[in-house]
Image (cartoon, rainbow, N blue to C red; front, side, top):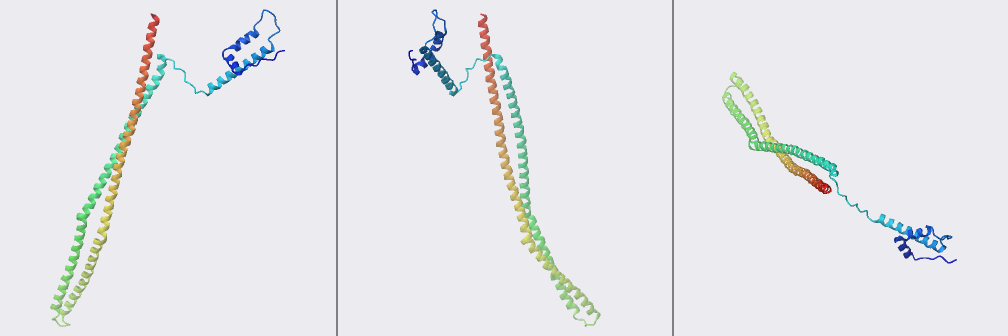
Length: 292
């Protein structure tokens, strides 16, 4: 018995790729005119090696196909009816984007109106606070000080008047005898005048203290409070102005985005409709050519 023939591996792969495996199988399985006992051991070994090489080739081809990036299948030309669903879907998207644009515009208008109203209110508060400060600085504080000075002057004049009356009474009633009715009457009148002088001095002291309190504490505190209110109103106005400007930019951005979305959807719909029309035209030409 002759030893089995071992073919090189590359030769086996070449035989397998050339389709010789099927030929060898056919040769070994086809009936022969002359009876034979079957393939020899050498032929069986060669056939087995070819089959093994074929299996190896198929396995490697499968691995390469699995490792290779998937390639998109060639797009088949669309028929006109294939565009109907896409056109309908894209039309709905255009309608939705237009609604979103309308909503964005309405929201922008409402938002801007609120910010404008807040800005107007802040401006009015600034005007009111500034007017109140100027009024107090210009007239009210001066009027309060003038009233306090007038009260002091009146009290001082009243005290001086009472002192003059006392001096006159003492001069008139001093010439009478001690126990005479006139002297007794004079003593009563002089005593009352002395008490009035005492009250006048106390009123003058209170008036002086009130004016000092007014000029050194009351008026400065009121001015500081009004200046603080004006400053707060100014800060609120600055914030309202910034909020209004920011809202204007944000509204412009949102409306622009919505408008761009509408334009993109409309462009996509127009492109899809053009493709559909082209497909319909091509289908009509093909049908005319077939009829001819």
